[in-house]
Image (cartoon, rainbow, N blue to C red; front, side, top):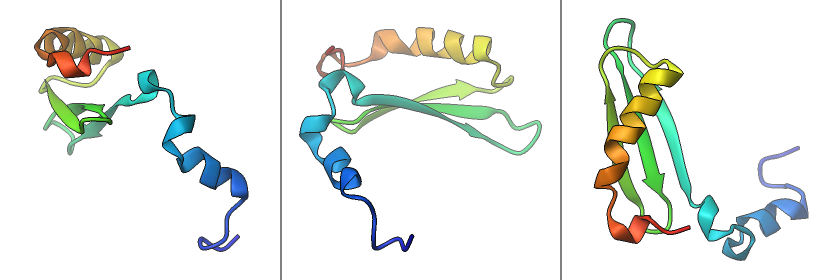
Length: 82
């Protein structure tokens, strides 16, 4: 399918009313070259607020969880919604 033609369902998914407020937060992981560590990102999509997680010693699930737990208390009030 050509990138300019897509099913109608895609258009409905792009409309903001179809995305509940609690779904407007996301995270990702950027992994550097071997031995250089990684950076985690936490994004609040409505305000476009971004927090970076420093992961110098690896990116196991335990290390990422620890970094998230360390960073979340610094999250501004406007990002602490549902």
